[in-house]
Amino acid sequence: MRALLVVNPKATTTSERTRDVLTRALASDLKLDVATTTHRGHAVELARAAAMENVDVVIALGGDGTVNEVANGILADGPSPDLPAVAVVPGGSTNVFARSLGMPNDPVEATGVLLDALRGGRERRIGLGMADHRWFLFCAGFGFDADVIARVEDRRAQGHKSTPGLYVRSALHRFYRSGGTRRSGALTLEVPGQEPVEGLCLGIVQNTNPWTYLGSRPVHACPDASFDTALDLFGLTKMSTLPTLRHLSRMLDPSGKAPNGRHVVSLHDCAAFTLTADEPVSLQVDGDHLGEHLTVAFRGVPRALRVIV
Image 1 (cartoon, rainbow, N blue to C red):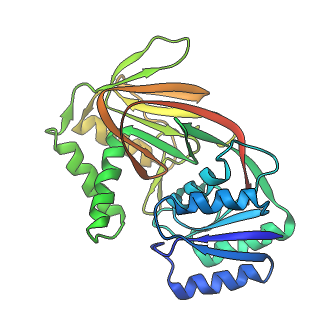
Image 2 (image 1 turned 60 degrees about the vertical axis):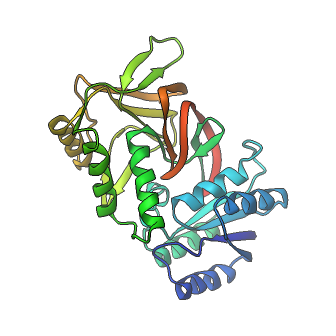
């Protein structure tokens, strides 16, 4: 089996020595080529080239951003049964996608599971989401949560480590920058065949559950989201301290019950919808900030990607 291993050398939880060990383990079972990324978007280029060269599987060794780029490269011309499968060796700080597939969060253990899956021919075809023309694996966000991602990226560029504490501090900074309350938002939700919903402060779009992890704890914004359904959305038309804390507490509850209340807006298994802003706001997909946008069209694409599990 021909395979390409795409390595992000900046992956936060793997050392160069660990990556060498994992590479040798994979090369023992596969006809393996290894490519190391050098810039943002490089994994897209590498995966697209692998798809054109009929490689059987592209393995991403890195965080969620690396896997997202690999998927976007493979699916650059749309889904097809002839495209390479995707496999993941988690090396980032959160690894939501790998954990959502049931992979161990430890890269060495995950490599063992991956090799067993390859030997046993275990694979799964999953649905993905699209934000305009960008594929996403597990989540996208428009508004508040994307602003938090933008601040985290800025802090990491200044040398700060990606930790749960950094995300919490960034969220608090963003929340209290507006005085700790937002009585109405700048977003409008449009679903075909339904009346528009105005005044959203944020829109969290999920393709699977959980939305993310806070350390080891899963965060359930849309608990019913699944790779086997279309997209789910969680939105708020008002954000103030106590109600927002109640929503967050419910998201962290192990029972996985969905947040509710009169300011909650939700969708489940929705094939297509659009979020529009009064002025440009931040967009993130799979934890990567994609700049500011006025409108984003979201859609779910069933059985878009073949993954090794």
